[in-house]
Image (cartoon, rainbow, N blue to C red; front, side):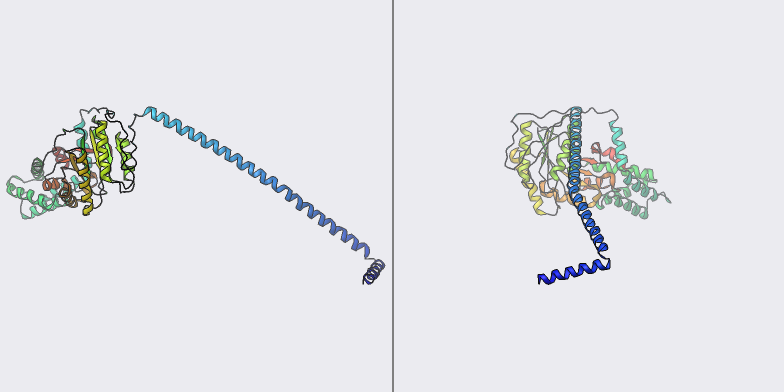
Length: 426
């Protein structure tokens, strides 16, 4: 077989040599071999250069990482320096006590007193500024009620049945309430001979509304130290914000304040109250999420007493007022406070949203029956045309109205002054 193959190759070589194709075939083979060698060289060079490119990219990435690290370090140093500068400029805020588990005792030594805040001087024109805030906050109510009372005497100068109906509509629209409106209208009818113009009608209504506030109970004087205030109200009425503003008023008045974050079930309630405590310069006692609210209130009173706080303000949960379990929880908090300090809480203040109108009266009745309200705070009067709710709720509940909210700033929570309020309303 090998011999036959050898003979075939020899015969083929002689044939190609005889025909003259031998040179072309050899030349083509050489060119083909050169192309193979060239392609192999290029492939090897590419493979050999790739690690260099990867290494170059890795070095560049490492350099970029180092530059980023240096930049982050510079920013951190800058932020740290800025915080140090602000800390040197800003007044020192009392630190928040660390109260973790509900059964953890207060670590503050007994007898150590809180820092006494500086008393803010009252400007001589404070009543004027208060009146301006009230007028601005009650502008919607004043425009709505005023325009309706003007239309009552648009075509007549006597009070008849139609006029009475228009006055009723104006007062009810301002959310004075049906019961209070009927009382005011009956007095207008009894004195109709003395009323013949919008100005006389406004003057008469102002006098009668002042009488409503004269019959209202007055806030009890503050005699105990610390003075414990329990604040209640449904969610969404501005309860936590009101506590922060109330603490700010006490602090600027020269009274040290400690807050108790007993609303432990609502998400971020403790964090929100902590922010307000920092803004007001007050201390705060808080426990972990979902801790026993009564335990928080107890520890807050204990901490405030040992530190010599002038005011202790206890925040509470605010689920729907129709929930019986909420009222039972509030009663438990109240008992816990009294257990630590007999006679406390000295005040139970209910925060109400003025924009809810007559629903606020329903809430006041429910909370009063449940925990015994001693005073009211009405918020968001600047966002409603129904400021007459102030007159209606005071006439219905006969409870003292301590503060009204007429804006979003710290100073817009103002002590209620009946005369200034009525003047701003008309």
